[in-house]
Each structure stands twice: as structure tokens, then as C-alpha cells.
Length: 318
Ligand code: FPP
Ligand code: MG
Image 1 (spheres, rainbow, N blue to C red):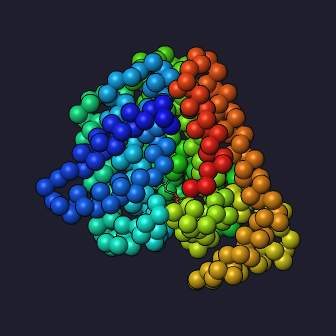
Image 2 (tube, rainbow, N blue to C red):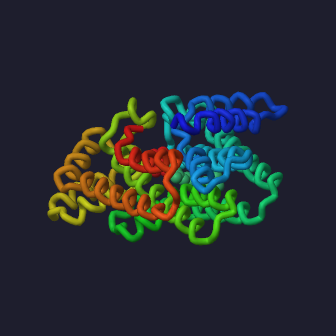
Image 3 (cartoon, rainbow, N blue to C red):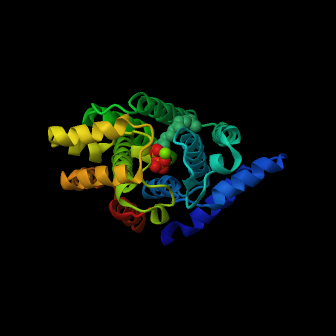
């Protein structure tokens, strides 16, 4: 993303300075989290969306930080819920410092995001971001309620990922159009585009949770099965399963502790039933549909970068 490298640099500076406090512990943990990087896909979306709509001002940097702070806050909380040990290729904050500091640093990041928005003072943007954040929390609650439930179907799955992941992607893209003062049609197009690529992102996340490796993913593979989360690859496979295969999955879901042998059994079953292939096909459909939504936006190098970023979601390894 060379084309926005200057903006991303300014974003990194803004992000780091926004977590400065008088309590050294907060600074240390924040630095640990932020230095690990991450893909910075959401801030790139804020910047690129605003650019393709004709806005190049400073506020895009501040909102890129708002979205990244909220995203990082949700990951810190998520790692506590998932008992995660690894994040962004490093031991996770909960693993190193324990659950309490991890949750509170997450709260700190979230509050910081609200503070930045308050300072900017745009009611419409506050509405967009706060709605998306509520949606993320709702999605996560829904996911917990459905944990261990093998009857979860595609509709329920999409309701969960639409909220927990796509809502923030959607807000990131809509912000760009709002900053540029674009009319409703463009705003809606970017909002829906963000939703589409957010869904595709979570679909590939859920496939990679089975088919990738810890090293390339920077987090532990197999977490979904370990935590008994039913995702699309498994939903699809179960639909085509024999009674015996269903029983095999049920037995694993009844166990307190999932072994690596169990993991490979389920992974192999999903593979045989075409669950991963299907998940990628659906993700590809969302990406194509998303890109089509941007037809009325004039061609530009920034637009090309945004389209390329969308395609890269399908081939990402981490
Ligand atoms: C990652 O999912 C988690 C999310 C997309 C959302 C997490 C949200 C919360 C915990 C609610 C907290 C809300 C606020 C406002 C702080 P995943 O577990 O599928 O992804 P992973 O494989 O990267 O862990
Ligand atoms: Mg997780």
C-alpha cells in the first residue's frame, strides 16, 4: 500500500501518541500491542475510502486511529474470551499479564477512541462508529450464546459475523464518504462495500483457523474447534454428513478437551465435504459484489489500491 504510506505513517504516530499516559504500565502494554502491528486493514480502509471520495485532510488519520483502537480493544477482550495464547505472532496480553489488565487496557483503548471522536465533534460520525461498536458487541454475545451448538445454520452464522466483524469494516468505509461530504448514494455504496469485504474477511478467517499454521497466522490455529465455535466450513460439511460423521463431530463437541487428533479428524472431514472450498467461494462472491458497488466512483490509483486490497483478502495467509 505504497500509495498511502505517508498517511499510514502519520496514522502510526497518531496511534502511538494517543496511548500516552502518566501510568507507565499502560504505555508499556500499549506499545507491546501496537508494535506487533497487525495488518492495519481497517485504517487503510478509512484512508482509501476518504481518498476515493476526494478527501485528503487530517481527520481521516484521526478516524483511522479511532477504528484501529476500537478493533484492538475488541481483540484484547476477545483473547480473554477465547483463552488465546498468541496474537499477531506474539504471546497475547492476557497470556503475559493476565485477564484483568487485558480487559482494562481494552477499555482504555475504547475510551481513547471515544475521546478522539468527541474532540472531533462530528455527531454523524459518532453515530456511525458507536452503532458499529454496539453491533460488534452484540455479535460477540450472539456467538457466545451459540457456542457448542451444532444446529447453528448459515443464517445464524451470517448474523454473527455480520455484526462481530463486518459492522466495523462497514463503518470504516462509510467514514471516508462522510468525511468527503458525499451524497447518500455514495455513502450507502461504501457502507455496503465495507460490509461485503468484512464478511469475506471473517469467512477466510474461519477457514484459516483450520487450514493455516500458527506461524503464518500469528495466532493459534484450531481455536474455533477448541472453543466449540461452529463456523461456515463446519456448517457446510455437516449439511452433507452421514449419520456416522455427524456422530463423530458430536462426540468431539461433547469432550471437555479437544485433542490435536480430534482437530485433524474434523479438518479432514470438512475438507472431504468441500467445506473450505465452499467458504472461499462464498467469500469470493462477497468480494466481487463489493467491488461492483464501487462502479460509480471514478477510477483512480487509490481506487485501484482499494480493489486490490479487497482481492487480497481471498489470498491472505495471515
Ligand atoms: C475476533 O473474532 C473478535 C471480534 C471480531 C469481535 C470481538 C468483540 C468483543 C469481544 C466485544 C468487545 C467490545 C468492545 C466494544 C471492546 P475471532 O475470535 O473469530 O477472531 P480471531 O481468530 O482473530 O481471534
Ligand atoms: Mg478469537
